[in-house]
Amino acid sequence: MTVKSIGIIGGGIIGLATGWQLVRRGHSVTIFERSRFGQEASGVAAGMLSADAELGFEEPGLYRASRESLKRWPAFVRALESDCGHSVGFGATGTLVVADDQDSEASLRRMYDFQKDEGLRVEWLRGEEARDLEPFLSPGIVSAVLAPEDQLVDNRLVLQGLQTALSASGGVLRERCNVAAIVPGEGDPIIILDDKSQIEFDQIVVASGAWSSQIKGLTTETTPRIRPVKGQILDLQAQPSFELKYVVRGPRAYLVPHKDGRIMVGATSEEMGFDKQITAGGIYSVLDGAWEIVPGIYDLPLNSLLVGLRPGSRDNLPVVGKSDLPGVYFATGHYRHGILHTALTSEEVALEISDVYDSPWFSDFRPQRF
Ligand code: GLY
View 1: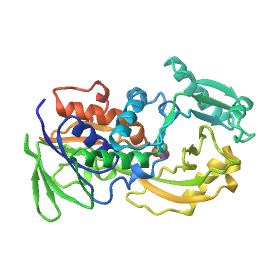
View 2 (view 1 turned 45 degrees about the horizontal axis):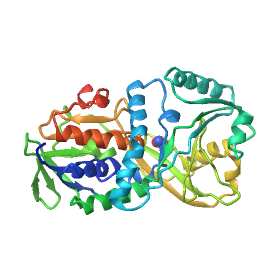
View 3 (view 1 turned 45 degrees about the vertical axis):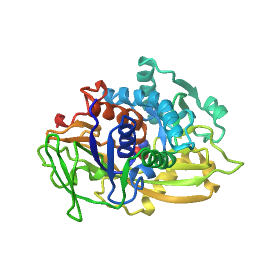
């Protein structure tokens, strides 16, 4: 393996994790972040690792990659915690996907049948069986699917851990450092910063989330369009008298209970361009959807309201692989699944960049498909 110098544009979870995996393989890595590391979509996400509960039969390639990433998360966490020296709040909670009327029950049943066909260990529960597991579920829940293998992680601790691990192993983290343009080139692509300084790398990785197609120097013919998909989310504080055991997903909202007592409740999905305004209607719709399935949240203290922009491609699948522009590689477009896909994407991208290797997991995600 040849040691390479790699410039990564974007300090979200995909950029940081890919950088860490590359540094672990001996490469020299610099990550450029236009604002603060991990403060955009990655830091706002709820942290659920729900390959089984969040995905369906419409997207088999995405589903298979999600399952694989879920499998790789425990090893990813072990390695990261050993490199950064602290816990990242990883745990296996399982998800309860609940239905509260005939329509939502019918769509839950379709998802369940698909999962059974795929050989997954999911379980169909009647409303009262689901309430035996999770007593805070509403009496209105008619049925549920338990996905016991789903996990969760504290994405904010992962983001901190990645920064610590990267710095400790010689990675260069450049915060509030905007990339003004790139100049592609086989073996010698260049990053130009706002102050006009130019840095040559062996390889550039675009991991800029919702901003990925806005980098000057990327041509429209070779760059898939990535759009921002706004998500408003809030976090509530669990109380000794109210602690959820499971991630709970309903037709209009999800609740993700973290080890530190925060319960993330999300999320809207809005096509509003780069608007990041938190709105009364957005927060209301999320709270109403969550209250309908877990009414006891009514009395919980509200910690904060958050908003992030998910990166969505035209078909909402990730965009991962070599660009047609020489020296430029994309790792972006993870839409609703950035945290879940981090373990797989970072490892496989690092392998593709290090060696002559064609990842079998990215065949549906290549930039050339558009
Ligand atoms: N994966 C959760 C969300 O995008 O809201």
